[in-house]
Length: 273
Image 1: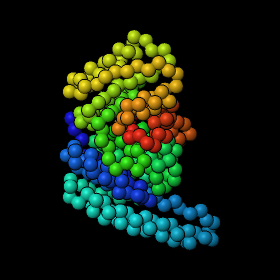
Image 2: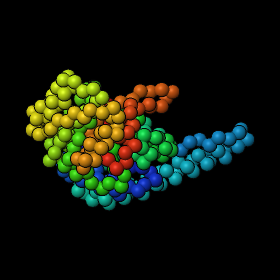
Image 3: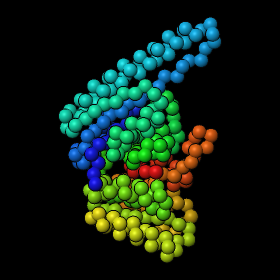
Image 4: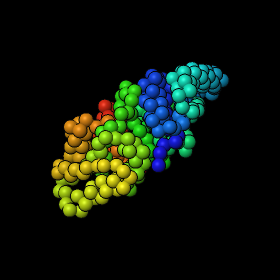
């Protein structure tokens, strides 16, 4: 089990160097192909019938500007990769979140930033990481702000006995195989033997893949805050978790821990759904 294709989502407004360097480092370590994706869309300006032709002209200018910017980013991407790994490029004129979710079929792992945390920001120019996780059908590494490397030496699995968390643990195995320390932690207000057995089962599952992991059960009411304190105390490089959410009025409403992790910009967050 390994990552053979990694896709890095590049925001059209940049900067691109930090996230490309981070994704390139992962691709080198996993001997994977690296695909750069840059997507943005141009909204059709609102105008009355008498200004229709002018609106179309402005719209075309906006699309031309996106295309020109994507060509410059493509050149910068090629310069940064410089033949270190096999690579590819995809420029898309479309909603960035939709383009990211569709293009995820190219990859074993998607790498993206979260400049607005759990909020979407400018939907025409910025991919929403939470929505991308829930739609992509691939694991998504949401990188820490400004990070140029993911050491992945200390990994925390934020465990909750759900389908999404089980998927995340399985998806993160190639990453955890390179770690020095893996902790499986769950937070519950009233932990019982069933909860403790679940954490131990995950540690045993990882052991079957050659990954030594310790288990930890934290008795607390506030999952997000307690998990963040534990991650900080471990000085974790990566937090692995399932992403929980549901659609309401065409917007994603996230569970408490998912939102808390997405809003914690100093963490590298590996998420699956």
